[in-house]
Length: 184
Image (tube, rainbow, N blue to C red; front, side, top):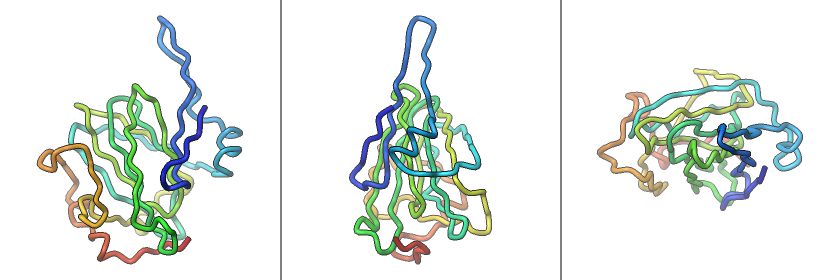
């Protein structure tokens, strides 16, 4: 298992060691000891999974304190572009983002710490996306930022005419309009 720093050092790409043969493959998707040695102690409390069609964009979401969440995300089937935006007010990378292709083929994962907005768009015909979180879902504390804010300058890897978002996500505020509840 390799832990790879990104341009925002707190966001980590995890590449598992994959053992394959004519029967298929085996990989260790999570190892608490290795994870803690590379990233630190994170107590995951819930696993979530979604299936989405091509063009579906979910995000950019986060939960406000005291229900903020760190996430360990991966795409089990298909291909997605995964994006994490630093929304920690006092961070030197505030407003910057990391984007990573996650797929059933590359089996990469991304660790996204608390204080980041997160989203992904499906690039394949469909995708199954899975993630662990370290805090319970609290609907009254959920929030987000509009996915196509020019200030964030995220290149989603898909024509904007193909993007499908929920009504709720289409009404999220622009980055310049939202007040971050996070300090570093």
